[in-house]
Length: 547
Image (cartoon, rainbow, N blue to C red):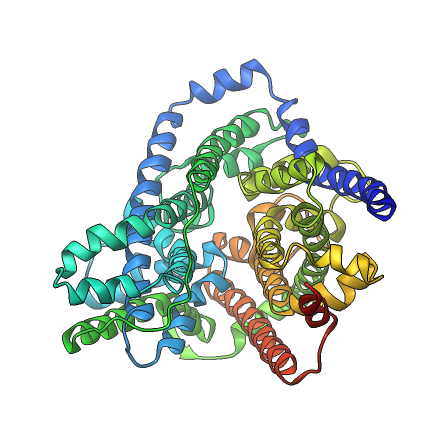
């Protein structure tokens, strides 16, 4: 009992320190930002002629793009998880490649293909898709992979024995879908809808690059921040509040949806039988969508290695050379440093926080858990503005430090939940038995929990690194001329005359770096699993036997 009390006494200061860090990362900057808004700012924004149109466009276009993304993701998840089509792993990679480039790159890719001088536009004499159609198309390409991963992961753990029983009883496939599939998938589908909508409505990369004259709340906020003089961000803050509202509603609805109960996940041991015709349709569907996902990347490859798109399509390396001359490698180095530091610090903070909340429960632990979850409701553009207002004039403003802080706050919620769920699946009596055997908590972390979580830790590092490499929104207003991340060159080049080829080169550079990181993380996970299989008995095994 004494040891337990000492542990509790020792953990309280750590929990308080972590809570203070969490408050500093998001809550305090957000409060500071909203404290600078005046009543006149609300009047100016709400009375602006473009405000009603921006609200309507943001809501309507985001809803349309969300529904298309989730529907397409669900169909593709069914095609890959529930049918025996060839090349599943290849399709899985191709469908998630769009996650490795910034959202603005999708818009630029669509401009190359379907803009006024687009390849498809010129070839088939079709109208350009600037405006609402372009925003919806780009948003779907940007958000679909995330929705696909969420739904495919859920489908992998559905117990398929009920479908086998339904087949034996002669229940038709449509009836199975409405009576079995929809009830099981209703909660994950709603969670995916909320997450996807929040992603789309707060993104400004796609509407900025292919939206044309169509205004949205995110582009209005970006424009107001860029035009702000003397540090007066009053109207920008109002737009930030408008963007927070749908994000918070989506977050709250998702949280309420999860609180209504939990699904029973059973690792499927068999596959439902699919007719040859179904497999053919599924394979064709996967091919078509994979090709569409690759189109922006293919367009980058074309733009990056031509003299002047679309006037002179002669192959050349001059665009790569021009990008390097414009400090491309220097900015790439900045991004690599920011991403590596963010991934390292993000893992440490996420791991410690998840351990304190999942394995050492208390009222303070619940507060920490809630604080991290609120990070998911804050759009990157809003977070970046709050950091600009809070830290402007300080020593860290314009440095890699502040951008690392912003990225950690922006992206740590998902890695935290990965580890929180991982800790929740481990035997809750491990610490008690370890304490009885004289194993300290530090040794428990080093010899029990970390070895068991290697794969999850690798996935967390990959998530933080990749997103830090390609993010634009959270760091748009925090850099200096020396610390600019390479992702911000995309919007700079794209807005300049003849800069689309250079923007394509930068997009390809980010994609290649992220692909290398994903490949390295995949190799680490394979080696970790192999080592675990052939390794000797671990401390974890010893404690499990004692339990």
